[in-house]
Image (cartoon, rainbow, N blue to C red):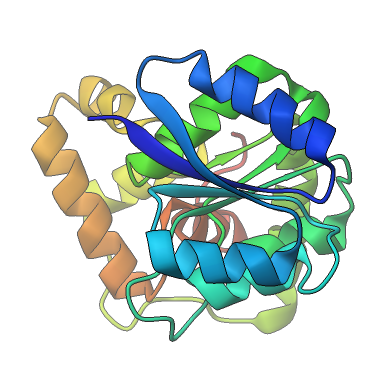
Length: 219
């Protein structure tokens, strides 16, 4: 079954380029395009695509506002949003991830990373352009120091700590399974349990917690 994608960008040429890249893949199809944020929200709510690729700067609602409307806290049945932009400014990255995005990809990162981000989002994973990772982790570590205690109400088990550390280092579920010698379904179960204990919605939240609490020092 193919992954359905909505493209939201105010430049028709950019949308056309993204469509060509994505539809060159046998498992991805673009089901709609939006030229502004308000249209993106309306189309996404009506069509409920598997993944929404959203530019940061658009007329109407901007990309961060679109992300919050479709995937933010309190949104019933949130959609999976990946922010795609030429702007790698910290406030955009942090705003998108706080708003519920499951990925943040720079347009110059290349077609392969864009396709990987779509597939990761569809599978429930998260992907951030490598060039942004170090900046993001520095930010969340500083934020954790400022915000104080981030211990979960229910402590993580030893195995859950290992899984959280692997998530923070950017490992995929199959890679975690191989590293820890456990099944893929067991990895998914641990990740769901970790998210519940930490009160986060996705792998980005797990990674942020891991770095804030100094659980790991390197991706």
